[in-house]
Amino acid sequence: MEVAYTIGGGGLHLKKYRTDDGAAAFTAGQPVCGLEATAAMQGVAHVTTTTAIALMGITIDATASSTAAQITDNAENATYVTVCINPDAVFRAKLNEGATEDTALVIATQTAVSAAGTDVSSDISVPDNSTVWGYKGANAGIDRITSAADTVVLAFPKDIAAGDEWLFTEHVVGWTEASPQLSTAFTQIDSNVAGTTTKNFVFLEFELKDITDDGRNNSYGLMVGYDHAFSGSQLA
Image (cartoon, rainbow, N blue to C red; front, side, top):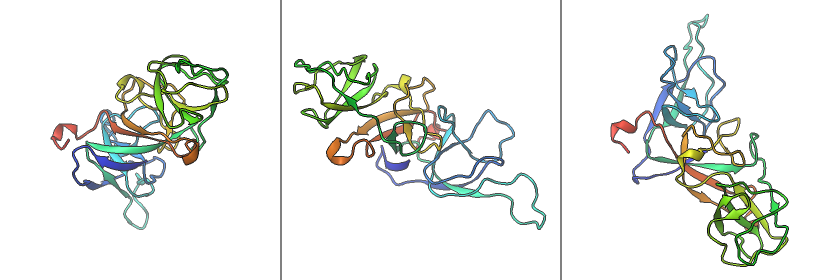
């Protein structure tokens, strides 16, 4: 995950924060939060795959987590990580097939002709409330939204042929009831898991690629944090 831009067009605000003790190491591109409900927390902590309450931003660099106990030689037991804290920062994250990083999106192959351009029935069912786009065929690079399984709301502009190939993600721009589930390392989007209602992030747009641009491994979602710790500061 990376910062793509800010909605307001301003520069990035970077701050050093102490890391919470006992957590896994921090890598670049991970969202972190303040865990405001945890009184004993003493630094920023990782989000979970489905929640990002009191999001503070995403990490720019990497570090180990802090050590709670005093170190024998009196060395500094705290570590610090750089965080982009802009409430209006837009995060660019890869659309991923599963919880493991860099797993290529699955191809859904059309099983029958749809001259009306609305039926995307394939060997893999495309769920409702999904964004589906052409990977290979006459509608390559064009996206639509499903209103029911294998049915799009707005017809594709060109007839759909048997053998056409689709990619899809179970998310829609602007819909807070289908927030993404992140990958295990928190840097990518588990795109074919139905969106959660935890409202951790909201999609602004997608970068959806077809076969000519290796869309299975090169498609992205761009999103903002829903519950940002500093959103009340009027920086947004």
